[in-house]
Structures are given as structure tokens and as C-alpha cells.
Image (cartoon, rainbow, N blue to C red):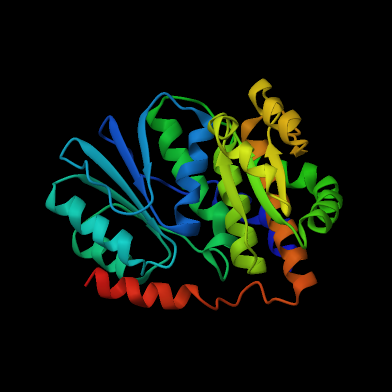
Length: 300
């Protein structure tokens, strides 16, 4: 299953010319859950000059001067459907990104701009088709030029190195509790944790640098099985690395888009290797369906 991630360059290539609507307001709120949340959070790494907020769950500060970008790959995520209906009530501008489901039906019925995408079997495997239209919209609104091909190039140019790195990283993680830390690349720490959780069915955690340097690092006094992993090479990242003698995942490129896609490749490959080692089926979900069922009762 490593090819799911190694072949991402084809998904990035297929989606790069997708037409996207214009964002007409200055205030932008992105909402999504799980694998549909993380593309919006990762977009923060680009530091575009926008009033841009990312919410996992239900935004509470919507109004007619806000554009809500609602993303659910499946189109059935109850929290995101609720958020869209709430945005409609608040007269917000809304843009929907989905592969179908109830969210597509709402967008069509309410004449909401719709970006319909098609990726792979799981939301986490379909990151390229969710992230690409989002950053195209944000870059256009920010009047910032980006080279969308760098996402594909990041996969191609780093694949050999990431294959080897994933072998080493998986061996260090197994039988320990990985904690992913980052400052500038904090969203990638979240993604690493998600991939380990969902693909390998294995505990993993994350923390934000420099906040963790003022509290969480102290827990390593009794953190026998914790393995700290820092993503990034900024000076403040090096404080955490030195303090905890942490493993380091350094960005390979000057391009942020290449760094994003290549580090995500590493996360995917590592999680698949760990799943294989543990005898887990990366595609099978054991507990999340129960949580989704209970959530449906909350957002009736």
C-alpha cells in the first residue's frame, strides 16, 4: 500500500487545472473534520496575507461578510453539514469541496459554489484533491503567485529518501509512543499523528513548539516510552530537539509546497509500514464508525 502515497504525484497532476470559484469576502473560515480538516490547517504554513481561520467542528463567528469553505470528502460528515446549514442561516458566502453525498445535494439545492473532486478510497489518501483547489482559491484571493507543480515535484524528488527514512522511523516508533512536535510545520505534526492513528491503529500525539517547552517537556521525567520527533529546523525547534534529544525531520527544500508534500509522503509511508508490522489493515476502521454513528445522533 505504499504506492497510495508514492503515486500522489499523479493526483496532484490531475487536479492542478481544476476550476475554482473566487472568494468574494475578506474574512475566510475553513471547516472540516479529520482528513478533511487537515488540508485547511496545512494551508496556514504558506502564511498567505489573508484573514483566514481554520475550525475543526462548528464555526461560531459566521456572518454575511464571511466566506465559509466547507470540506467533507465523503460529503456525509455531520459536523460539516451542520456548519453549512449554520452558514446558510447566517447568510455567509459558502464554497463546498466534496466528492458527493449529502453535502453535494445541499450545495446544488441551495445554489452554493461546488468543487466536486474524486480521489482514493479514504479521505486521508485523497489529500491532493482537497488541498490543491483550496490553495488555488486562497492564493488567488491573496494575489500571490504559487507554482502548483511544486506539490507534485515534492513527491517525485523526495520519494527515494522518504522510502528509506520511513523504514528507519517506523522501527524507532514501534513499541514506543511517538509525539510529533513542530512550530512552523505544526499542521504536519497533526497530520503525522492522524496517519499513525488511522492507518496503523496506534497511539500518537502532537505538541506545539514553543508552548511545549514550558510544560510538556517536563513530563519526560516519567515518559519512559515517549519518543519525541520534531518536524522543522527553525531555531526554536532546535530548543526542543536539544532539550529532549529528539529525532528530527528536516525539510528538504526551499519551496514550502515541496516540503509539505514530501513530509506528508513520509508520514504516509511510515504509517503504512507500522500498520504492516502490526498486522493491521490500513483501510479498515474499527472504532471511528461508532463515533460517527453517535455523532449523527447529536446533529440530527
